[in-house]
Image 1 (cartoon, helix red, strand yellow):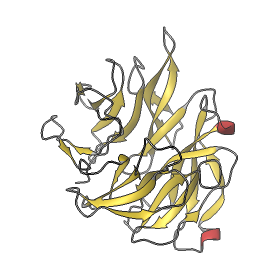
Image 2 (cartoon, rainbow, N blue to C red):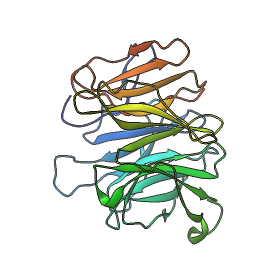
Image 3 (cartoon, rainbow, N blue to C red):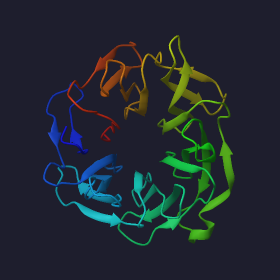
Image 4 (tube, one colour):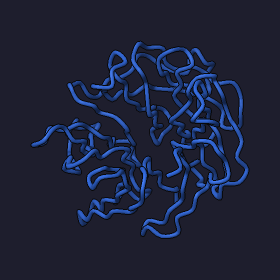
Amino acid sequence: EDGDFDIFLIDIDGSNQTNLTANDTASDFDPAWAPDGTRLAYASNPDPGEEGTVSSIWVMNADGSGAEQLVDTGGSDADPAWSPDGNWLVFTSDAEGTFDLYLAPAGGGAPCRLTDFPTNELTPRWSPDGGRIGYHARQGGSRDTSELYIIEVDPSLPCAEVVAGRPLQLTDNDRRDEWLDWDDDGTRLLFSSTVPVEEGDGHAVVVLNLITNALTALTDASGRDDDPVWSPDGTRIAFDSDRDGDFDLYILDLVSGQLTQLTNAPGAQVVPAWQPR
């Protein structure tokens, strides 16, 4: 509402909305919960109105206290995600030109560059077993199409050996497949995809079964449904959408099919993240 982003907590019934980053002038975005639910990693740009300023990765306690910068590559650092054991963070940065994936110790330390491709690698997410990272790549740097990929990783190895082999491409089409999230057993990926509708192209939330390769659309692409995430128990998903005008948060119950609008406020409420149980 004030020209930049802040990070909020909200109950799943829409109550108790709390601004965790209200006391700074930075733009704070891309929140990611630590596996134990006690901390949040996020990206922060100290002066979004100043030309040339870039974001870095920060960590704070669940109540917004104890905020500290974890890593600053000198580029635009964003999209942090914790490893399942809580020891590592993967994130994206354009420090070397295009956006690549980087790895950093959660306790602080020098980042390790994981990818070096001509595409922009974005929104990395760890598999539940910690051995894979899924992400989407914008083909040729284009914002018009993007595909999903998986890399195998072992963070305990030296930087040059963390990634094993070449990325596995999961989707191959002329749409935007992006903003992925793993289910709890690592067999399904939730993501946003452009799906043709009667008037233009909307974004639908889609599930990819990694065993059968079956695709299932969960929403109807009546707007831009983005940033989907599973609930901790796997029975619901949260996502943001502009289906009613401004971007707001929604919850879809996968059992009943009921769709609930969680927020309705000026500005954009985006990038939901469920607190672990």
